[in-house]
Amino acid sequence: MGNHPAITKDGEVIRWPASIHSLKILAPASYPRKVTLPYTSKGYTLGYPEATTAPEGDVARVTRPIYLDGVLTQQWDSRAFTEDELKANKAAADKAAKMEGVEFNGVMYSATKEDQWGLASIKDEVANGIPINYEFENGAILTLSTANWAAFKAVWVPFRQSFFL
Image (cartoon, helix red, strand yellow):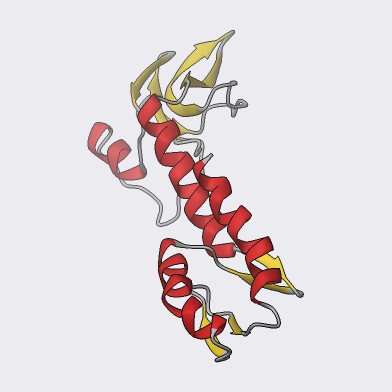
């Protein structure tokens, strides 16, 4: 969350967020090429509010600053995630976890829907003794054969199923 500058005059916030351009409109004058904040022109001051810590809450956003005990102080608004946001956050976390995958013999193998379909399409060949070099969606490659198929499934299938429990 950024702390945005504000323009104040006589203890009142005139504009927030603000910029040097905003100040030039409110107080036309000759300005130096480089302005250091706080900067005052014709009674208007452009400066940063005193930074404060974001409050507890899932979603916090900076709001218009106010004067507290004579100090321009940043304010916040916070709320809990909505059901839609919670679902979207879980979906994003699940997608990332599936792509990261599960470890088998020291390598991480993704566990996406595409991986599941691909593994299902080669299981008969592997069961018939044909080794298959399978490339997972995360780029990892595993040679699947009758020698490692059961051990791999014992690790990969429960991991994939964990997203649906």
